[in-house]
Amino acid sequence: MSAYAAGRALPPRADSALAVEDRLYSALALVRVIVTINMVGLNAYRRDNFDHPTAGLVIVLVLVAWTAAAIWLYHDRARRTSVLLVADLAIALAAMAATPVVKGADFNATIPGFWVMGALLAWAIHWHWKGGLVASVLIAAFDLFPRSEMDQGNYGNVFLVLIGGPIVGFMCESLQRMARERDAAEHAAAAAEERTRLARAVHDGVLQVLTMTQRQGAAAGGEWAELGRLAGEQERSLRSLIRQQDTVPTAAGGRVDLAGALEAMAAAHPVHVEVATPGGAVLVDERVATETVAAVRACLDNVLAHVGPEANAWVLAQASRDAVTISVRDDGPGIETGRLERAAADGRLGVVSSIRGRIEDLGGTAVVESGDWGTEWELSVPLA
Image (cartoon, rainbow, N blue to C red; front, side):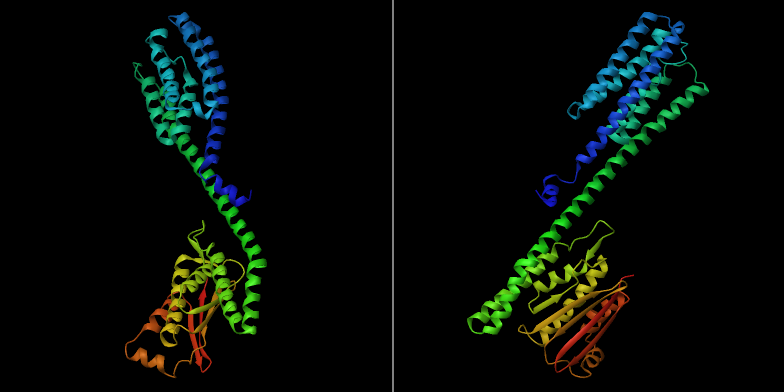
């Protein structure tokens, strides 16, 4: 299977975003183990603070058991449902709510302590900053509500929980978004590589055969000449189709392939147009491509209006480091001397606005030469 076909089989959503989520839950499993060990150790150390130590021991054992169950449940994507997340947070909140009953109204630290981070981070991973915010607000409320007074330590813990949940959720969302963007970029690169391979194969085979048929048919004359003409049309259509595959905005700031856009425009124009462009894509800003193609189309429209649909036209695009130069030539009778100046003086600004105006607005130049051999426009557009 080709890279492009593989890219089409798996849409660029997303298995990478789910893979990021899997890795985050794997990291969370380690966090759960650490905070559980910390919770068991602190409660054992503070066992004299319990009014009902047996009930406290039961709660601690339940939290340890839930830690093992949660690690197993979160490991499988299919089990990561809203019910699991709600149950996870509910168990943490229940343990906090039971603290005043088990330890007494004057308790200092809740039974779960930092163990509640497991549920908080799970909500942040699954529901991003909104989930982290909701979970942190609920945990803060259950921590503060039973207390008769709030000291500096309690305030610091609650403050960290309130800002930590949304921040972790935002970071998780950013990681998943970057994974999706990376997938989309890799998908586009694979598609471009496959198009290049196919275009090379077509160029080396079909296009060369069509070109040879066109030349030999024209040389043979008669019915063979008509066959050669048809082969030439198919060659131009096929070249245009290949180039149009790259005439799409890229991921880098809305840039498009000017060469492909010229091919597409010329293929649809009534005048017989032969287009020669560089071998690779000519990436320019979208506005530059739009205005340049419109100016070239205006040149071809003039050919159609003043020479006729049987005219031949040629479009040659050349790209340098700093500019793109496009020549548009026809085999008509040429333009009378002073005709363009008279048209502008009479208020007919078709050439001035449609061709020169567009190119000059882009910071370029549009120069026309004409004679009994035809008319040639040279449009130069800077890339900066």
